[in-house]
Amino acid sequence: MMTEMLDCDAVMRQLWDYLDGELTPDREEAVRAHLVVCNRCHPQHDFEQSFLRALSASRREHSRPDAIKARVLATLRADGFAA
Image (cartoon, rainbow, N blue to C red; front, side, top):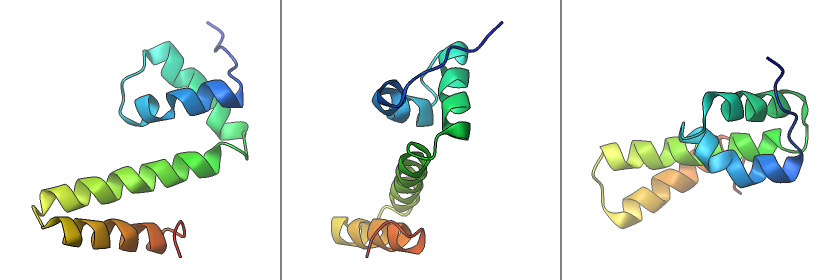
């Protein structure tokens, strides 16, 4: 079976679903194949993945909204996505 080639716009529209594991196996493979070769889309993938990790970590700690915001920003800074 051949993987469908997606363009950048199609990948960006599906990136959150991809990161959440909500795509069909074929569509997931098509997005993954595009990300492997696309220098334009890969940084956005890294940013969104870092954001989801930071959000998940802050939820586990059941902290106040101010603390959640601070932890998300700290994680994004550590990953090079915020100043």
